[in-house]
Image 1 (tube, one colour):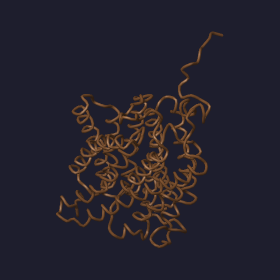
Image 2 (cartoon, helix red, strand yellow):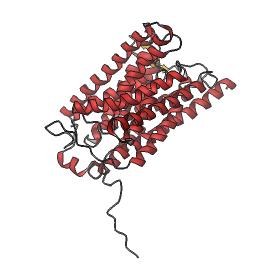
Image 3 (cartoon, helix red, strand yellow):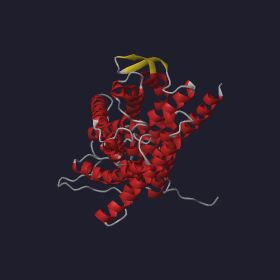
Length: 406
């Protein structure tokens, strides 16, 4: 193996490890944000991503996304063709597996505490096998129609986060809110999260793994943009978290910890599309806007009476859209604010709308099919008891155990 190819393989495998480690972040974040009686269930759903999602994407999805023969500019098929030269196919497929299951993980938190576990397994199989690979091919696959128009989505603000976020809100709408979440007079009942420090650990892991998510998308250890991409990623995260702190202090008179965590994640989501195309000042501006937008989007969704326990739409859907548009504004070569040219912004807007509509439409279709066949939601009694015992036979925290001396 030539030296250049070997070093690329090492870099991409390490980056893939960071991306796959993000699943641990999703697990801790969601387990910390939901109620105690459902913490095991959300963790098990992340394991569905890591098992069923990995297998179906490797067997089917990666061929639809990166197959060498393009079918009608909608899918690929056949032997997988890496989108970078001098990179082994196995390293490329490993990295792409992490992206696919991250898309599914966005959905798990939005439908937490009331969706049937079996329904979620079906959703992951469909998302990783067909839904995500189909739309991602349009911008990343050979001959994809959005790629041909010039759309820029370096690491997935649109292909992963906007699409996944709108799938999440679509399925959250289809399954309905948790019992008691909204009262008939328009009030919103706040359910206490099980463990904020646990959620914060998940946020730190996601932030760490995101360096591999974005910088690893170079697929090239010698890419001169690599260090700038990593720096832009962290600066946007910091800016998103900082503005979320300041905005919640101004609006609610407290520094809200869940909004702070989601502000960090929102900054990461928003910069993901443009991390390779913008400078550090633009990355911080993007993060600042994201930190405010995540708070506003959370309130907007509550007003619509759509229940999203972890803020998946506010983080991924709303900021995936914004981050996609931000490329058209801040791209160093053809952004509206940097060059005065509006063409890229128009292409980015078309791409953002396309991914949002695809994600939401697929979610409603899948939700309708599941509701009409296997069932989408657990019974009222099961929801009241909690899904940990009903679906998995074990609580998250053995608080009732009594210890006796032997």
